Image 1 (tube, rainbow, N blue to C red):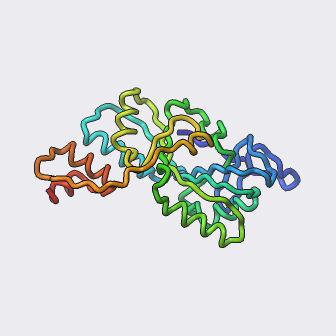
Image 2 (image 1 turned 120 degrees about the vertical axis):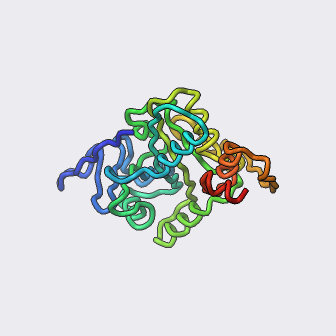
Image 3 (image 1 turned 45 degrees about the vertical axis):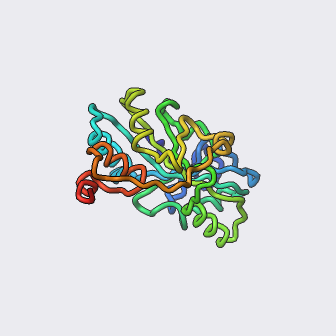
Length: 242
């Protein structure tokens, strides 16, 4: 995925189409309003150029372990949807103090669903992973508390992960998205740009306990169990437990 280069505003013009804040490596998208009335902010955080995209690299590696062949390009970012009347200056403070790691990360900010988040990507190659309604989002709860402690009034925060495919067939995208990128019991997939309607349409989570016998499982089943159970274990580690 190609990230646009932020534009450094001149001292006399604070209304450029993209504004970069050096301290937080923050870029506002072209169509973002500067008024304080905006309610739904979308923030996407991604590795700076020259730093590894470990989340995407791990997903591609696991796809190969599961038998998916071919050259697949995948990039990732993590993000937040903040519901609250925050100005650009307040968003800059929130990103700098809470959401963006200095030096290694940068971020884009815009209205939820802004087409600028797609940049040069085709919508069908972009997938968002979000917690289902009813699932505790500890990271979002922590971010919301910290933002309120800064003195900013917000309704809430929701987190997501974003993945962008390149050079992948529909079958490859479906395989990776459904078997690797998300846990269907607690997360949902949303293809294309985010929108408020999709955020409100999340399905209820499955909170039941599951017991699994490891002995009869083959390599593919062990990797699938590691992903579904959010164990973050490699095949070798799963076979050791087995």
